[in-house]
Structure formats: C-alpha cells, structure tokens
Image 1 (tube, rainbow, N blue to C red):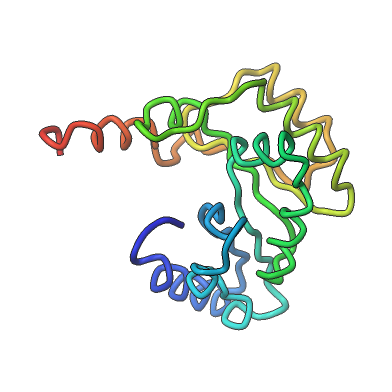
Image 2 (cartoon, one colour):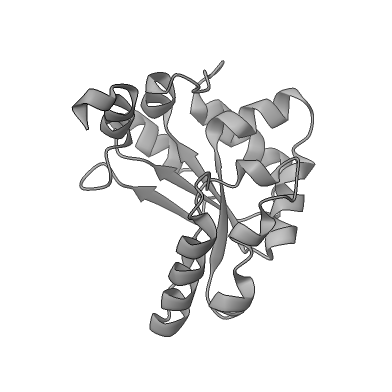
Length: 173
C-alpha cells in the first residue's frame, strides 16, 4: 500500500499466487479505511480466485486509533469490500518511531490485539512482526491467543527500520 505501483504490484502478486496455489497478504490497507479511492489498487480477489486465501492488512497503530474512535466496524467493512478472508495486523513500533510521519502507540500492541480479538471474534487474524523482532514473552502471549497464524519475519525479513533510516537521509541511498 501507499505506492504509485501498488496496483501493478498487487495484480502481479495475485496472478502469481493463483498460478502457484498460494495465499496472499496485501500491503497496508489503511488508505481504504475512510475512502475507496485506492480500492482498485487492492481489489485482487477476482485475480487470485476464491480458492486461495487473501488477507487485508492494517498496522497496530490504525487499530489502536479505531478503538479510540469506537470504529472497529471499519475492519469488517474493509474485509468485506476486499472479499478477504481475514486481517493481518502488522506490528512495527520501531519502523513507526523512525518515520518522520510515523504513528506513536499509546499502549502496548498486545493490549490492542486482545481488544480487537474480543471485539471481532468472527474475524480471522494473523499477527505479523515486520523485521525488528519480538521478545519471548510477547511471542508466548501471542501463541495463547486465537490467531490464525503468527508471521515472524525477524529471522530474515525486510528490515523496515533500516529502510526508514535510509529514507530519512537521502545521502545514504
């Protein structure tokens, strides 16, 4: 999400997922929470097919904000408009901290995740760590929750914190 190439990238990924029988998780769908302007960039269910899993994606910060505004129904609306099978919650506090425009969390991500699971028990959730790691206590707590999966990228995923550092200083690119 958030790039001029989103439609092309998502289209190509959805076609590849269908061809190879794989599921797909979209990039951040935060732009779809309050507007359908970017819906064509994410609307790939017809490309991936009904048989393959398709997950929408929101950051923990967006979920915290929706809870504060008493608007968690926007999560089910998002899933419905994308005809997705559930939601990936990406947990990225270090990346957000390093972004000049990044969100600041008001409470621990685990508290937000628990609130969302309790409020939306009919939704399938995946929690995605995005490359900075998680402590063993956090992982133990997540594994006790009714999640479809935990995606743990720290052992080889993209280091988004490093990318944000490079983005903040164009001279380093």
